[in-house]
Length: 77
Image (cartoon, rainbow, N blue to C red; front, side, top):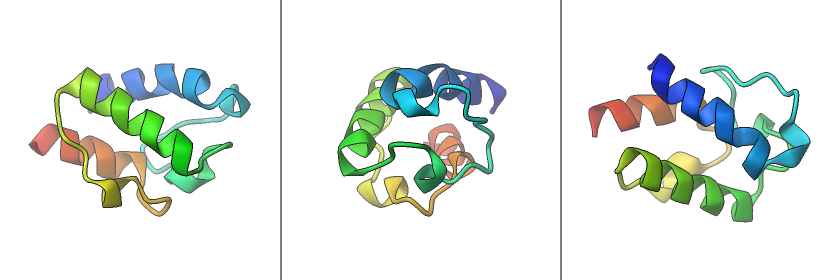
């Protein structure tokens, strides 16, 4: 879990410049990330799919999902 979280933490400032300095933890909800919107969710989805080799369902990237939800999906896919 930690390795996946670190990769996500590393990319967040690139995808969401307003999130620089924002604390990213497993319980962070996607809609809490500064600049989170439908376009950024597409970019985040592409990053996840290319980095972890999984197909991420669109409903998992809704704002009420947490990073822990995404990590759990990646680990079990």
